[in-house]
Image (tube, rainbow, N blue to C red):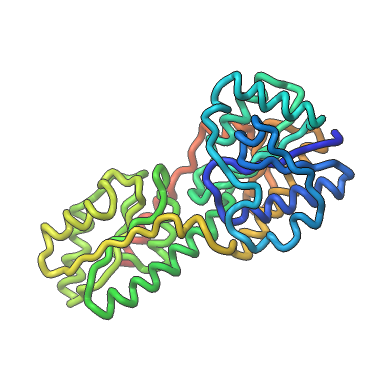
Length: 323
């Protein structure tokens, strides 16, 4: 193997730049030529390649987003689109590829590898949702929960000042990991997530208990994908049962994807980026690089995509016990 490339695909996540930096410098350390592909798989189709040098990844480890940019490519979902990407890669002599993204990215990589077996692909898990099997933490998750926590801490200040109940919606269309961790960290009264049935009776019981304690401020955290229908619907349900609460809704939205990655994020992303290049050099392909129990692990794409990480019921119960 003499030439490899790296791309970021799907939703951006803090720490992607740290991972890119590690991929580039590990490749150069191993005497490999390294190309950056702009705009994910769409850039691969269009031949939007940049030959990377060490200086090009200087001073990016602390930046959110991705210097290679990201895009969801409808064209790559077609056989014709994947053939174009293959021809572009081969025209540059590239025989190894590092893809940084989530399950959609790995699904595309898996299909591509079945069609074109002479290009090895290794993935790094880049998604704030932390919903990929085969790693304790995905790139972006630690920063996202810290961003959400800091925002909710500020909301609690105004909630307490005005005796208001805030319903805060965080990201998590299919997974409640961000909601659950931030609920524990901020002392929320309740958390509603996609993995569990919305339990309004339990929520109402908690709020009644707080009212008896003369507590009229508080925080309810809702993952955007919860079956309840989102923060505004939850606020409507609560308001119809509790006239004593002054209720406000805050949707944190895409601020959870941005910002400077945490120290843990930068270190984990760097470890994964280095591990991805070393895997390619060793002839390993078709796997996602993860960190499990603080050790680099390899998980086949099909497992990372197929299996889901289950929510720890103890953490969910903690919210109720500690509220």
